[in-house]
Amino acid sequence: MDLTSLTTEAPNPATTDLDRMPVADLLALMNAEDRRAPEAVAAALPQVAEAVDLIVAARRRGGRLVYLGAGTSGRLGLLDAVECPPTFDTDPAEVVGLIAGGRRAFTEAVEGAEDDPVLAAEDLRGIGLGPDDVVVGLTASGRTPYVLGGLDHARSVGAATVAVACNAGAVVSTHADVAIELDTGPEVLTGSTRLKAGTAQKLVCNMLSTAAMVRDGKVFGNLMVDVRPTNAKLVDRARRIVATAAGTDAATAAATLEAAGGQPKVAVVMLLACCSRVAALDRLAETGGRVREAVGMS
Image (cartoon, rainbow, N blue to C red; front, side):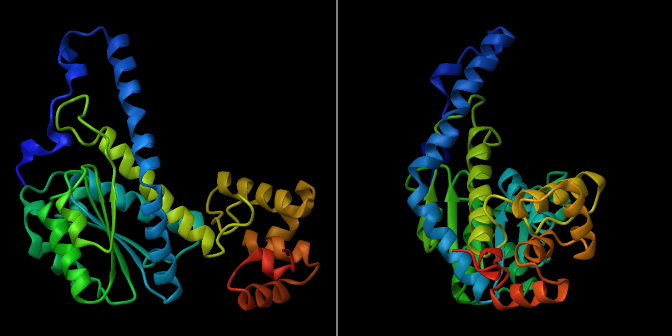
């Protein structure tokens, strides 16, 4: 596909005088254009829901969520992946981010890496991708060879595949089981897809991981009961989560959290079910880590 046919590469008629605008006007225009990102995501929610279903199914098989992308898209996938362990107490291997050019490409450009479809297949073989996994290919243009090659390899080994692009009728959509197309339109700065396109992709990544973890019992109500209290701020948050979830005071929450070995989910079950740490762990094991079921709540 010719790049000139992509809306993400087209000049934005509203910003032709960008370099002559007063800063206040420039920022107001950027803000107005940025509103297209959530609107584009809203239009694609049915496809996002299909992708969540694939991820949930993969996780229940013991499979992984693997993000794959180049440049900004790859960095967004990596960002979502590295946030999952502290937020949902997942193993780092459960949600993986791969970027064209390797981890070095997160902080600096690795020229030409995104143009090599074979490189993605090698990266996926390197993590032992198999039929239980699901691969989410992120590409604003919808035609990045690295992502196309990666999705094709994923399909060849039986893995589920999702494509996320910011152009309608994207090439990548034909390389995946579920195609999420986000029509964010031309960028304020022509071709700079770290702007609206990047924002829209980030919103989708937020949805994919968060919704999947909610369905997987990592959340109670709207509380992240699997958060890892690894610093002072998170310890305080964990105590407040326990207090809110169990309807108890701060002192009781803190003491129970300590007795639970620093695991908020276990502490919540201990309080709501009036049981010991060992009993709480047993209840959670029996219910797949779901607090509501572990304490007999509907």
